[in-house]
Structure formats: C-alpha cells, structure tokens
Length: 259
Ligand code: MG
Ligand code: MG
Image (cartoon, rainbow, N blue to C red; front, side, top):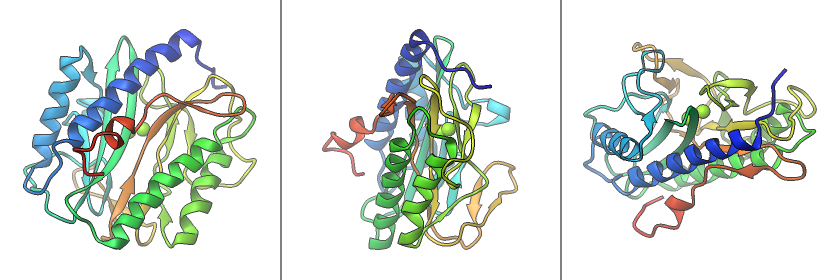
C-alpha cells in the first residue's frame, strides 16, 4: 500500500524539485563542445552544496558522482568522466538532491551544439512523451495509464521504450513505490492516489529497445549503439490534473542555454 504524502511533505519535496531544476539549468549553461562531463558534474555538485543540500546520488549504492551523465548511446547512469563532449552529441543529465530530509530527482537531455534532425526528433519526442505521461498521472488512474501514454506516443514515431528501468515514487527515499514503467496497458498497475509524489522518466531509444549493462555495473547502453534520450520530472498526483513540482522552465526560459 503506497501512502500519499502530506501537504507538508509535498512542500519539502517542492523545495528539492526547484533546486534540482535550477541545478539542471546551471549545468545546461555550461554544456558545449569541448567540455568534459566531469567538469559539468563538479559545477552541479558545487551548486547543490552552495544551496545547503547534498547531492543524493553521490555514494548511493556506491555511485561515484553527484550526477549521472549519459552521453549518446548511454541511456542512464553514466559516470562523469574526462570524456570531452563534441558537436552533435547528446548528454542526459540526471540530478538528485537531499535537502531537509527529502529527495529531489529530475533529468534533462541536452544537445551539444547542433544535432542532426533525427536526434532532434528523438529529444522532442522523449520530452513530449513525458508530458503525455504527466497528463495521465491523475487520481484514479493507474501506473499502466502513464506507461501506455508514453509508449503509445513514441512508438508510432519509430522510437522504442527501454523496459529495464522505470520511474518511481519519491519522498524521504529516492526510490519509493510505486514503480512507474514507461510502457504498459491502460487500467493496469498501481492505482494512483491524490497526494502521491512520483517521478516520471521516459528513457527512449532512437533504435531498438535492447540495452546492456556496462562492465562498471552502472552504465546502461543501447545494444545497437544508437542514441537514447531521458527526461524526468517530479509530479504530485492530484484529482483532474497532476501538479508539477520540478520544471524545465529554468532551462527553457534562459536564452543562453542550448536545449
Ligand atoms: Mg533521476
Ligand atoms: Mg528517478
């Protein structure tokens, strides 16, 4: 049984969500050809700590960094490294915070310089599928309605949904129930109750859906080595319409950020 959050808890989750949203924008300001993912990670870690929070990914089950930085065919959970971003790459930036005992968790995939038309389409479709999922995150629906909304949006465009990873509840823990798959059938899965806080995070591949785990035990990569995209927002399930806690506005309303 998944318990909805109280409004007091939701306010603490909102503070985290806004900090994560601002951190993603701070990273976005520095994404450019020639920059390393390690440099971006360090900017984010400093930004999070400057705001009195802790980067919650650092040390989580042994994860070695503040951010997951997943370039091109890495779907999620990439380690920041000395790898230099180059024109035409995409980098998924996934960020978590721990502040006042609660978690923040959101992700954005940035283009590096100019990307080709197919990549642009992948980014746009993945983000649009996230909003389709959010539209389905209303009280009385089930997690399968969210998954169905994501899947039925991206598959007709020729893209595929990663099956091995999913969204999740968020609270004091980074991964709470319910799991929120990005594929599924309407009317199946956990019933969504008003006040549940969930992260919806489609991971969408340009090619086939198959992925494999890198030898470091973390990085998830597409088997066909085509690009993958990943966007994540935190929402509160409400009656009629979900309420977004995190937002991409800090990225998309900043004219200096390439998104
Ligand atoms: Mg995340
Ligand atoms: Mg997440």
